[in-house]
Length: 115
Length: 112
Image (cartoon, rainbow over the protein chains, first blue to last red):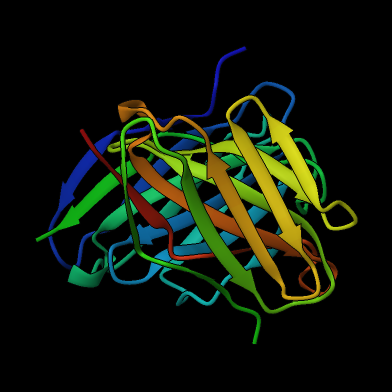
């Protein structure tokens, strides 16, 4: 079974631009969560999608948005990029919404650098 | 608010046991997880324990849960160089709709 696939692996953008990151979950998984990982803030939850609906949202500004398609693939968009948005963005999938006994399976992430 | 705390670093000699500790604040936790992150990679689930258990063993890994003290530990027996990674503790609890609350991660350093 293929794992969670994130593209692209690396991205360099300049301030003010916008960026779209993509995540393909494990086949059969309908929940996709996005996290931002930085050395200073650790792992921060962005949002979770399940069956094309946003189920949960973290404390990030409206510049961060996402969506999920009918095939469970998800995209995350960041508009008007700031230097502080430089981070590793991780996508994780699970079979159900909310963790309970269904653990998260992570992709290798997209490393975004904003200059 | 809810919080999960871990030490940032742990250094052990190859072949020794590593014990990574984690404390959490929410008493309604249902599941507690340990994830491993190797350099340049995402997080990999190592093991998890339900809050009505006090111990779980899986090969070289032993998880101990002390609910009274809200303390979780991960013991890695016979630590190898391949165990070098950052280890994250996370809890899921009912009031957060089971969204995970994460620790900051413990970097395990192996000395030859």
